[in-house]
Length: 79
Image 1 (tube, one colour):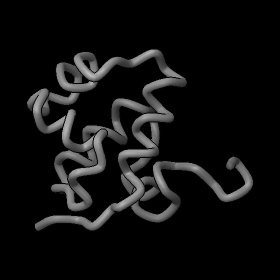
Image 2 (cartoon, one colour; image 1 turned 180 degrees about the vertical axis):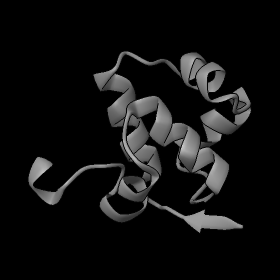
Image 3 (cartoon, one colour; image 1 turned 90 degrees about the vertical axis):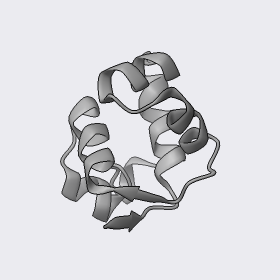
């Protein structure tokens, strides 16, 4: 099962910058292959597995629900 999240690459870039996380860190800490991380950050993917979304949420301290409903845990007032 995949989840359509066209905004995820932008959210990940923001979280990475805020937390000083590199692409290599993201790959290692989420156990997602480096070539997949590169493609995700380039916006080449808009559909993700639940496992991937959970890994990103855990790493950046937000819930999966926040990622799905609020664009990576951001409320409209936070933008």
